Image (cartoon, rainbow, N blue to C red):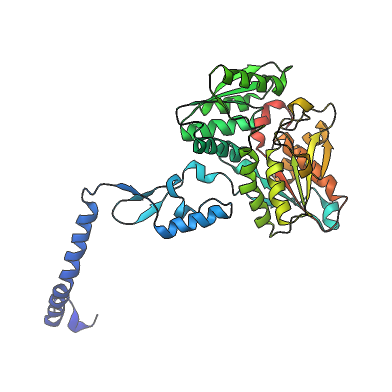
Length: 381
């Protein structure tokens, strides 16, 4: 500012008057807007705009969750008179899990031009791949009119499905009864209780077979509705519409082999169906425990208890792993890769590494189905 425009000069005072004169309308306009914004305007919820609904429909058609900007009823819009913002609910966080490369555990496979990719399903809200079918089974049953919020749901589980169902039931307003063998880890039981589920134990000697029988008996007695993950097509459908498309998209369509442990078989059935439609030559490999091995989450079912959702034709090859191999792979994943996962995931990775030693120039995707923190009491780690 020059000498002639200092605040005390005549020219300075004149310019200050002109500036104030021209600035008053702006100041009054700003004050008016401020008063309107801070007045007692009621908050309200509104649905997304038509373009947002179109984006959501397009996302669902691709088997992907709606983007945060157009999640629809699951994520309502809060408008306080300034701008609309979209907020997600826990349902919106199921799926879209990361796919990461093994960096250190398969040097021999890397020399053969192979890459092993692990899909980290422990990143789902309740910590496992089972979040996908759990939520899908409840929502599909609602849409059919089989259940409504406030009802009681019943399911036999060895752990992960129970945790996922307990979370999904809490989100959507259901009571949950879970039946499980009494040798399951305390971490799993405690997590189910935290979500509000009631637990019923059966003897270890009876196993999952007894748990499944008891669930059906309780349903016949009118104590609730059995979702039946072992025979419910909404289980593999969840993976057909989400896990499979994610594997295909995240590999750019380069996946050559898919490796998954087999328990209820929902994951491998749904992913196989999707990938085979995209490329029939993709090899689907199921992982089962070797004779005499006990690996949580992987089963060799007696013929009469084989899940009815299982279709043998959708699995090209079965790879057996023993308990020691699965446990050592789980420890190595934590120690060498920074991936802290459960024992069945260790079995799947061990099978993928074995497969990598037989093939060349392959992109092998395997499911790391849960987190390792729910197995700490087993002593494996």
